Image (cartoon, rainbow, N blue to C red):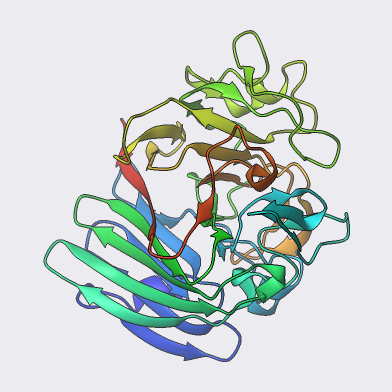
Length: 355
């Protein structure tokens, strides 16, 4: 996808229509980050970041065929909702009333259901100031959408700052109580999309506890301490080393409980570093949890933008969010949004390089 980068030389965001992906918006600042966002799924399709020598490369995985974003690669880079992650059996009770959501093949509701926000065509408008550039994306989710109650109006801002930050800002309002949990589902490879796997990347997750899950990846029991387990990533750890630990199984697809905080200010959740290129990415968020997914189920079926099949470990997803199945877990932070309230969430990806 070098064509998107070559077409953009700074200035206000550039919009191009596309029959499969909706509108393609390209934006950034010269010498820094450049992003491509598609309105189909409010999707981060590409992100070019310079390495230690100043050479840019696309560090976000996406399928070569845009039509795959509604089949085998539907979550790649997408805004997922109305509820990111899993709700067990697609069922929850809110204010004494039971609700049944649409479910996937395993019988659970994943990332908002069978026709989630990742499949929708969002409306978009550009934003451009001396310090920030990008797009605001809008979606209305009607009452009963995938079984969720209430009309929900959602805005997602995807903006690049001059200081090499990519910001995701989420806002939503509703006319009836409803669970809301939004995130971006990008997969990153800081050596470059199609460069291979991320096993030599170094990962840090600032969490003292994680959420154990059953064979369907549904949470069970209380959150457990990471100390002494395969989930202790509080110090820089090669992903290959982490995955070799007893208990890591086929890789991570787990929620990490971030350090407690007293307000909604940004704090660091994780960092990712590729020694081969010097690229480093810090993840800062207002959210209470971080889902770490090391793409252990990738089998080469999806062919990436560079023409390289994506195999196990081709990228890593670091999804800031509320905890999985929290509508059914009253001890977890509540995801319920009520009329008169405003859902607010922000995640910042801060890029830099090391020698």
